[in-house]
Length: 168
Image (cartoon, rainbow, N blue to C red; front, top):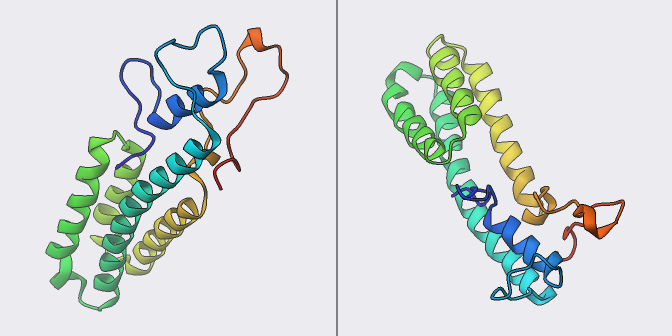
């Protein structure tokens, strides 16, 4: 699941909307039927986002590590069907969320590197993806920029506001 999936109406993720509610609840543009989010709410929401994101990334890491094990087993041609199954699952999930760059990365690894017998390069590329996922998991979901991080012009502030650190 992509915790930063944007809605089609306002191009905001659930994290963006939460940040808006947290930062601008007293502003003139804040909808009267929305509730301002407390710091405690921010901690709970950060934990929820982290849990959802980390479960998804853990699942993807396990699939990538399975492909690495199959590559390192020595008989790549024997394991192609099983590796294809893992890559098909990974790319199907990425397609749901419009992650074209990640789909292209997996296509290059599978169709160019693995099929051309470049096992070491394939393993290295897959390990890099795993490392990026682990680095992502070490960060708060609030550490990523939001469309609401920068103050609105009427706020008259020079620096953006961020919730990073509020929920850690």
